[in-house]
Length: 276
Image (cartoon, rainbow, N blue to C red; front, side, top):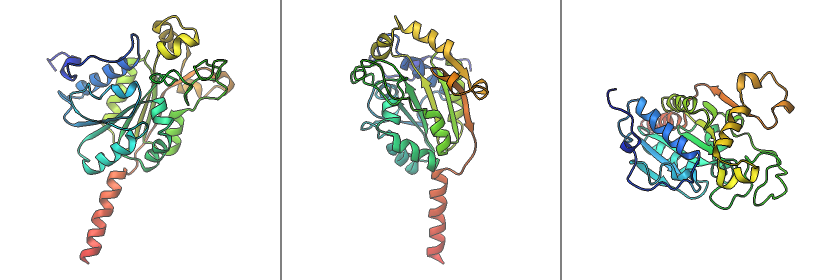
């Protein structure tokens, strides 16, 4: 390609809503860079769905593309319906940890089980950032939030391992301190079929970082680098030694019949029976 990558080619001329240092900007940049490197000069082959939360603002209304801003936690069923009607489009969901595995957890599990042909990119900032900094399903144990001022007493949900166990065909986790790895996973996932899940552990200095003792977003990124453990190494360590660590890498990559393929095959079989 002779043309240089520019985010302006994919974004509407609107102010972005993210706080200074927010990791959502990294995720947005690497997704658009991935699309560019795959040869997508525009986003006409994509449709985006998002729920409610900081990360939901990544595609809607900022991408120059078709997008649906749904109710909180309901982006996956919306994308499922779109993909069933328009299997030619790449259905991509952006959401936060509260949106995807909090209120939207049931949809998440069943979409993986059905191998729904959608890509879910979850920006895990470990807190409910937009609504006041409440404890989230992914908040690290002992972390202070507005609803756990003395520290979270719940252990965090491992969304990547849950997706893999539920039947997803591709699962990866990276941090925003690993933008190149994140971009390459997005490229791979776009070119695959089935339920694909990428978790991007992201800094949120405004709602999480300052309460956790980080002076700025840079300190959080440094903490990500120091505490990210490749999955190959993590598998050789005991569970206790992984407490407080972020296991990164590709968790699963496999092929299974997708929901779209199964539904359309069944429709054709039903037509044959009716004619017979």
